Image (cartoon, rainbow over all chains, first blue to last red; front, side, top):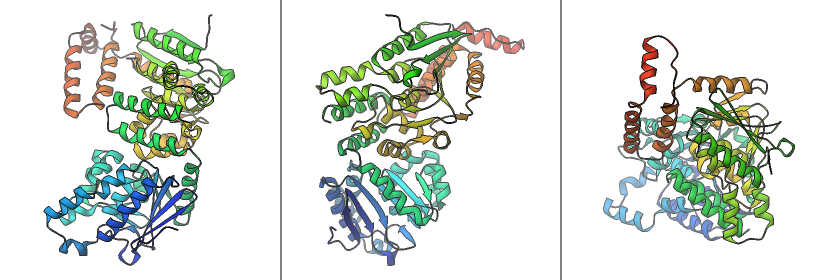
Length: 242
Length: 261
């Protein structure tokens, strides 16, 4: 067990790191402390060669993460300072730069930055009671932890726009249909199913996993022809350094 | 040496390409990859072929290729590995065909076999078929376009799951995630594929080619560039005899006789 964090539990077992959002009394709402701790944890996941795959989940019955902690919004620093902080220490950019496979294990409310955390992961497993939404426009703001980009790349432009414009919550079945989640399972099956996937992944070579993830993610934002070249380059490295 | 590991048959403007090593699960070997490349080039040169069907002989579509084995077992330098990968590039060969390509997946499509199917335009599969990109479990990654075409087809989330877990899925799941267009019974696969390719073969052959180009290239460009390309190709079609014939036939309430020019 590696720890020293308050708002997030961080453990490591058999090549799997477990990152558990841990403010259950606030529906695991994302606050500044969580942001800073998540930053350190993501760095650790990146650097620790014992970690092959990471599982993100939330404690408590009601939520994976209900979004940003709005109490802090009214005491927030000036936009200029906030933008500078973001540039210096961009937790979302760091999140998207991790080349190890990451799973999001989702139950209850998965809202705002909670959904954006899930969107930074590679595979999303949801329990049937999960509810998803990006309610930012209701507050007069927009999703800014990558949501406008990651969501549209995952479920398509029209579905992303509908979710963002309406702020509507959708259930696990609809999320499955949209491709927002990979699987929807009963709550008691949520962790076992996710761990089984994670264990399966840890049985493969770290270099192949990282290569495959890089090829998919980099290539997805390139024209096909360039993506095919990216795949060949990464594949060749995996093939000769087996 | 004459080999028949890939067969090309042409009937009524339809080119049928059959992977023909049923005793080995149609696993691609070097010779088969060369033959396949050759067949694809012939199809592009033959103006009589309007639409193409790719399928496998026997109970399997294609169980993968010998490339992975060669890469895993041999100790090799980067140049040799690169040459090997190029030699086995059947997906590149099929994607170079400028006509519509329908793949009739008549059984398992694994590894490079699935990557081949992904490089075709329309996928019909018979029940009992299974699909998987297993390369990561061998310490490799898919190298025939699997990491590129799968996410473009089924979305990033599903693609990452399939590639990172090297999981095998059935036709039901393949249909749900959009990996295949249609799922049919074993007995019905040929007739369903026949029905759609015969329908396609009644259309203007130049229009088919340019529609394919507009969609494939347009999806890889910005919307504005894509719309520009569509307009340009449409204008090009205005100059063909086939367009005149198509409109004439419609007005005379008869079937058009296209010539492909």
